[in-house]
Length: 468
Image (cartoon, rainbow, N blue to C red; front, side, top):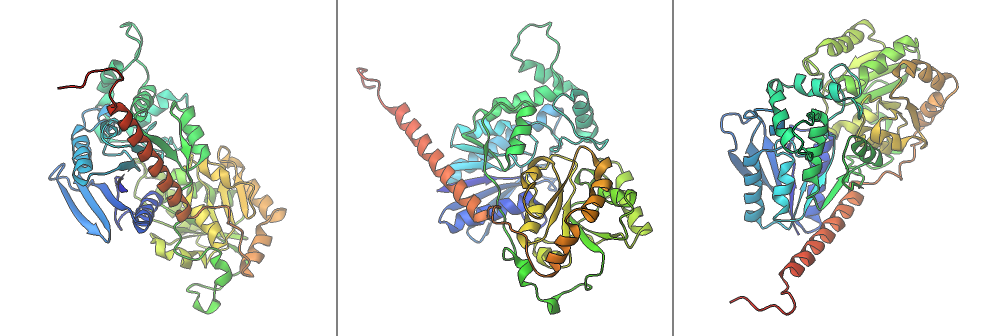
């Protein structure tokens, strides 16, 4: 197969779970004998919008287009980027692709699904909530979840979070045009409903829609997506053997020997919706710093949606309580094994509806116990051995729950097992090879179905005269 993968980010500068998953998937599909073509975006190439360049990475062909939404006039322009559609169609034709998979429509627009589907079977893999929220997270600037009926909150957040959309209430004119009711006196639908409705209209042209967890599929449907969504777990692209905890060698340790306190690590970009600040505050509220200490691994951006308060607060806690919180800064995926080797527990205290939760699953695969919230795709881990779950909707109860985890729960037992080199089970979490084979089978089936449809559409009508 000639497979086209569309994603907005590619390369070593992009370290998130989405980027590493797409990179791993592309390389595996190539190893399986397929030709894989990547089309990505350079949002920093502001001087020459839509200029493109290409290069090879091993067997992968990479094409990159400069674009950063600088020409948007309204909110609707984020969903349809006509020039990007032309570029993608030329890319498909030039490489004679058999199928393409959108791993994110950011910078390409959701309308590109309809445009590309006219040429080849088109898959859409939803790694976040962009098709129902332009900020991707259903989490507003006031640090709260945007629910299915929070139309005003959604609109305020979408128009407040980006300078480019401050002028975009005019987009209501566009959205009114796609309303199904022709009565001119019908009130304008909300921007939230309009955004989801337009995404729905375009996603109906997809040959398949995929998301990595059933919880995410449910949330998408709650917010207005009415297309069929299939679940294919991302799988883990590990830089260490599964159960590596059992193979640790003490004399290769790069950190301090473990003390009495339980060492908890939280990995990833520091932001309010990731819950690092609320978790540390819960430890202070529960007066748990005598038993627990936290290490944050990941960059701390200066602001979150223009607000510095949460970022300053996490730094303030680290300065005021150095025995509780240590900030370690950014890390590479290759560092995971070394980081995990210095921890007793990994926490992922998310306050937004996580789509999958790579870090929690990677930690469990290493052999470590984890503390999570029941947020989106993380909820699928609850109930498994080595998993302690906090209520996402009630962070005010976290301090009490964590204290119970110490006094009555499994924390000390887990820490003892961990330091004895006894890993937690993780066989139920698929590998990236498992995921890649499922995706490969899906692509092959969709191409076969597309070929049958084409053959049927070209058959002559019985009894008709041949054209001359």
